[in-house]
Image 1 (cartoon, rainbow, N blue to C red):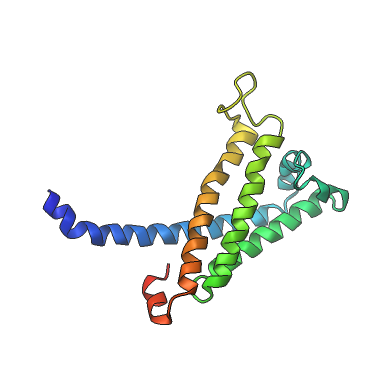
Image 2 (image 1 turned 135 degrees about the vertical axis):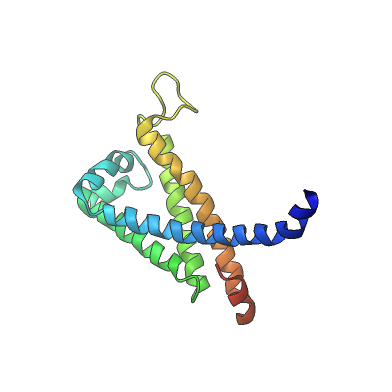
Amino acid sequence: MATIISANGHDRGRSLEVAGGRILRYGMAIMLLWIGALKFAAYEAEGIKPLMENSPLVSWLYAFLSVGQAAALIGITEIVLAVLILTRPVAPRWSAIGSLGVIVMSLITLSFMLTTPGVWQEGLGFPFLSGNPGGFLAKDILLLGAATWTAGEALLASRMVPVERERVAI
């Protein structure tokens, strides 16, 4: 059994690693496009209002923008970041910039866990998340990890010679 794994394990492992990297990058971009587009819907704008209005990092937006306008601004930001991430095959530096933007966005969103009432299950506290908004925010831990990996990979790719970049492009 060890012989079978060692003979083919590297090739299969590399294939899975490449496939996983593509799923992370393009799945994250699709998710950002999707979530960004939803920000233009009134129900989504109202849905993120409690998160935003309790955050010292973004609540100031409501002093200048309506609920719908603030949500649209976030949606545009998410869509732009997704498009930047999708440039990886032709412009890895731009893709890295998009991923770095998602890192910042994820950290801001994760900070809502500290500022939004109702994130933790009443009477239990940490680590017991409520279904909403707690469970909704928890996904950003994975988004942070994916963006960190894609930023690093794209930054490394932007420094490679063109022949090598094609060989390892994800």
